[in-house]
Image 1 (tube, rainbow, N blue to C red):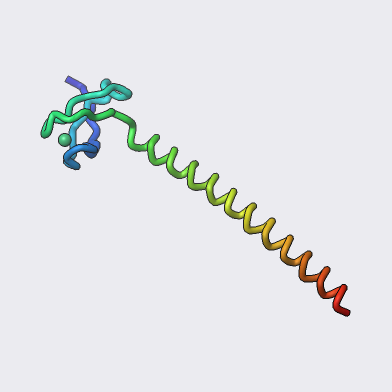
Image 2 (cartoon, rainbow, N blue to C red):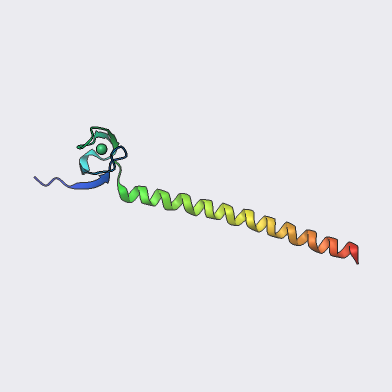
Length: 83
Ligand SMILES: [Zn+2]
């Protein structure tokens, strides 16, 4: 009677599927195409994505910074030798 549903996009047919909250974490069949569908909390999935992006950005920043510092060192070194 008090069952809660949430909507998720089917990876096979791209249509919205209504999933009961008690089926979270289980593999279900899509109501439209009968394809397999893993019932995952969409809020948690979004959080995972954000975390991964943050880590990638942090690594990119570190790489850029190390490249920038080594370039600056080289430049000051070569400037010292040519003088
Ligand atoms: Zn489907």
